[in-house]
Every structure is written in structure tokens, then in C-alpha cells.
Length: 415
Image (cartoon, rainbow, N blue to C red; front, side, top):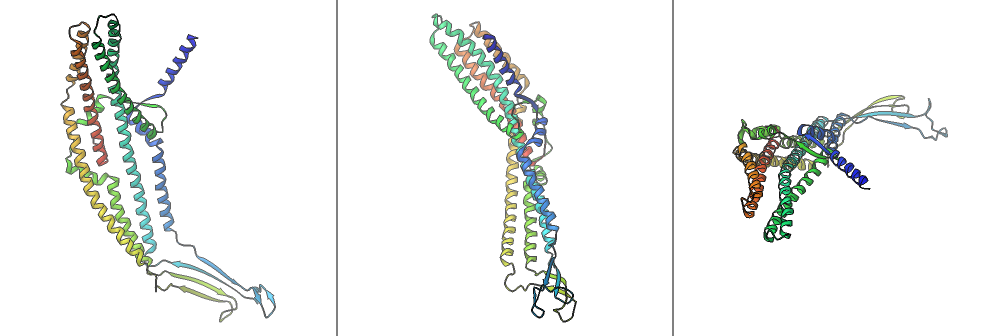
């Protein structure tokens, strides 16, 4: 029975390992572009807008009509449409005036470009979300490594102190202090795990993945976010104006509303209907052929309401563009300042500092086992060390995330 239980546990452990997928950021983004359902669904909007452009180019079909005799009272004959009967045929085609078709086509083309920009903006937003989750999961894993190492050491001490307390060799208050430190570490670990669970869920959704993602990064991948860039806030703003799809969309919205205003004005111009007809006997001549022309009289409906609406919408889109300009400036200034501060703090973090922390930690742990330092000194140091280790990891995470936010703000990879 024990062998069976052991085998089942081994199989379960193997499945747990298989259910994890180690992946680089580049591979992660490749899978995202291939599998993300939101992107796939949004891409159909582009296809729809292209189909509408095709439809806008198509003229209305010509109209064919027939006038056939139903009853001839002179000969008491039904459907007398033969050689001596009566029948008439006509075909008519509407001719658009005032540039209606041209305006309609240009409006459709502009809407097509807007759909593409909307897709690009969705891609930009989801890409930032993907990268944020990827990096947070990575740095959370680093925090968990440090936390698990300390928890394992403290767990051993708690077990040892429990035995010694029961024997009366150690005061209960010392055991309680160790247990308190242990619980604090476990609580901190639980918060990290909960954060990772949320970010893992986001990664899986974005990637269309069922396995847990294990991000793979190198120190070089992190260090690149602290390098100097050849841009200041002003030049970044100019760069964003040429790259940001949401900003470009505001410009295209104005263009679309201008074409719509032209279209509404052209709709007030009557169209002409041209045609030709043939009549067997009811006209002035037998088998006569007539030319047809028709035009509606613009007496009441001159499309004034729609023209006014189009003007208001155009002015509204211009105001929205001005607001977008201000918002863009604010976003870039904030993102740039955050990155500058994060890069400065990260560059002040020397590799030797991390090595010194590890050396001191190992030394403190060894001296505590040798009873060279008190329990109070040891627990104080462990709490300080844990806080420092987390903060050093946070410095790395902040420079990466602030760099990605700056990338997103201008829609260009600077790092």
C-alpha cells in the first residue's frame, strides 16, 4: 500500500512539473500574437471595414420594369402582348450627383484606417499587460526563493527550540519570538503567492495557455532597462505623436468627420435617374423608343439636420484631439520621470552589495547556531535582511516596469 501511495505521489509531482512552462519574453510574445482571442476577434473589425469600403464603391443596380397588358376589352382577350397587343419595357440607372460616391468611398477608407489603428491600440495595451504580468511573475518567483530559504532555516530553528523548550533548556519566550518571525515570513510569502496567482491567470488568458508560465530572464535582460537613452521628454512626445495609434486615431476621426460632413452636404444635392424605354402601342408611335430622365425636387428635405449633426461631431472630434495632446504630454512626462528615478536607484545598487548581504546572512546564521549572538539580534537581522532583499528585488522590478511603461507610452521599444 505504501508503494502505491508513493507511486501516486510521484506521478502527481511529475504532472505538476509538466504543468509548468519555462518561456522567454520573446517566445511569450510570439505565442500571444498567435493565440490571443481578443486580438483574433478584433482583427475581424478590420476585415469588416475593408468589406464596407468595397461596398461603398458599388453603384446601385439599374432598375428594369415591364408594362404588360392584362386585359384587352376590344378583343375580350387576356394578356394580349403579342404582335398586335401591348407591352412596354424600361431600364433606369441612378446617377449620383455632388460627389456622393466619392465622399462615401473616402469615408469608408478613413474608417478602415481607424479600424486598423484601433487594432494597433488594443495590441499596444495587451502587450503592456502581457509584459507586466511576465515580469511580476518573474520577480515574485525571486522573492519566493529568498522567502522559502529563510522559512526553511527558521522552521528548523522552531523545531529545535520546541524540543529544547519542552526539556526546559530554553525559555518559552524565545520560542514564541521565533514562531512570530516564522508566521511573519509565511504571511509575506502568502501575499507574494496570491500576487503570482493573479498574474499567472492574466498570462494564461493572454496566451491562451493552460500551463503555468515560468518566465526566463537574464541579468542582461534587466540591465538594459537602466541604460541611457538618446531622448528627453520633448523628443519622446514627438516620437509618440508618430507612433501612438490612439493619438493617430484622433487625427483620423477628424478626417472621417470631415468626409462625413461633405457626404451629408452632397446628399442634399438631388441625384439624376437616366433610362431608356420601349413601348409597343400605347405611345404616340408604334414601337417607339423613349429616353427617360428623373430628378427629385428638393422642396422640403434638404438634409439640414444631418448636416448640422455632422458639423457638431466634427467640432467635438477637434476638441477631443486637443485633449489628447494634453493627455499625451502628461503621460510622457510622468512615465519619463518614473523611469529616470527607477534607473537612478537601480544603478546605485552595486552587485557587491547583494553579495555582501548574502555573506553577512550566512555569517549571522552560523554565529547564531554557535550561540555567539542572541536570539533578539538574530531575529532583528532576519527581519532586516528579508526587507532589504525584497527592496533590492523591487528596485529591479521597478526599473523594468517603468521602462516598459515608457515603451508603451510612445509605442516604441527603447530598451
